[in-house]
Image (cartoon, rainbow, N blue to C red; front, side, top):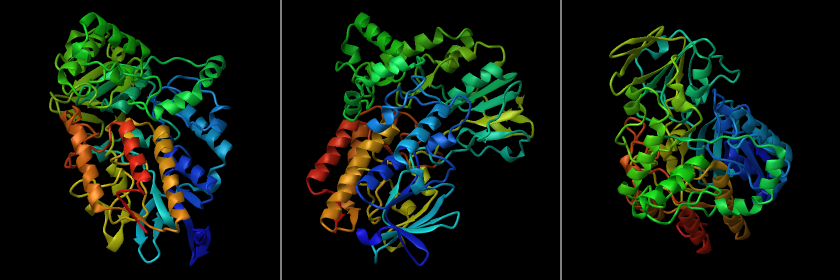
Length: 542
């Protein structure tokens, strides 16, 4: 691949690898490619590092994986970095990425404010031609999209939205300079992860906060706490072992280990004690750290839900809100939608300045110049916050015109369902190696962990090809069909299909319903290793 080392041909920069996205996955891949002697660059649509953490700067935005899950395992980075909180906020994540850059010197190979619009495979050269909105043209042997699962915000088609006269922002497009909610009449539409976080902050300072909820969120206690230097230094003594654990843990989270027994088979007093211990630990311990069958067995799942419901109702003063926020019967099985983590979300509804509107009872009819009109009332507001989620996983790919062999579009290739081999490669799209995308563990494996698990596999694959003077890799049709069928089979063995979640693509009107992610990290890693050990079985190399 030495013949393509960063030279220019007819105005195009030519590289071994071109990465899209400067989040955890893109940055790790750039670092590893450079270590192995490949020429590589990143094209990033934002003006800074961090991927989603460049865009996520809304009030209360913070990570939901506890330290040290949400960081690189590279010693040169973590040995000199100290977090201030167990669950860091967005501004601390930005400082972390600045530290990563200072340590690894990455920005010299990153083009910011450079949004990719088109990417076409040139079969004659076994290269990708890439064009950006700012007029940049580049070519690379390998194209590595690191788009993440939240690259395309979803805004419902509310009639009259364009008429609203006040500030209106989706949480994924929050003003970088911030927006003061103090003393304002604020409306938040949506109670997913970002909605929960905004509500907690807005309730403290808004004159009036109106929360529009479609589906009750199962939010778990974060159990946030401060971290000082002494605590961090003690934690770091076990970092190497902990980082090795997260790649093989069934939860992909450090120190989150479920009891192997079925919840319904455990005596009630003992079961309640295990639930309570996980509850007090906070974070995702109660989601994936109680019993191994919570996401497989409806009986065990209901026991977990009932524990959550009773704990949550005890924090809500108004009995009328119990059924709205923590229904007697679950709307969907517990944990089949990713739980949010909260600090005082439920307590906010005890405040006189906070009102909850149930959209199952009174639907939004239109957005007016001065507020929100439902089937029952008009709500006058100053600021409208759209916490309405994302067209997850495949949505980011739909924003770029990817063209494979013969000009085939990626949207057409996935029209009847996503087809990849191991989430890395798509038939008819040679040399495009996807990281943190559909049909890999993306949603069940946080960014840094996936970046290292998948990124190391890709590097080993590229080295394998370089050693054998191979220039092309592509998923076979047969392997992609089998992988899609395998994921569907795994999904049917869980309760995940019983919820209209973004895991299933079911939060977007008209989107095909299918399990978009592999939910078991150790199984995924094993399948990847098997393919590599068998000469990258499932891929055509030449």
